[in-house]
Amino acid sequence: MFIGENLKNLRILYGYSQPSLTMVTGILENDIWQYENGYKQPSFEHVNILKKLFNVRAGYFYREDLLNLKQNNIDVNHISFRFYE
Image (tube, rainbow, N blue to C red):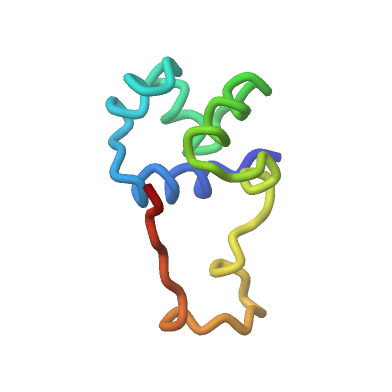
């Protein structure tokens, strides 16, 4: 099952609003909102567009975020993110 929170986190991390993500991907803003809030499952075509844009594997959208798991051993202070160009 698609986890919309993962899409929302990536969208925010990359600095996209829902309207700007629509402009880049061609996916309707209403669909993006529904994906993020769990009201609708994206088509495989939309998942492929999103995975290419955010440079992640499709499976990323279907797994619970490790930081949200109650029994994780990840220290949030040791996580970093770097953009490569």
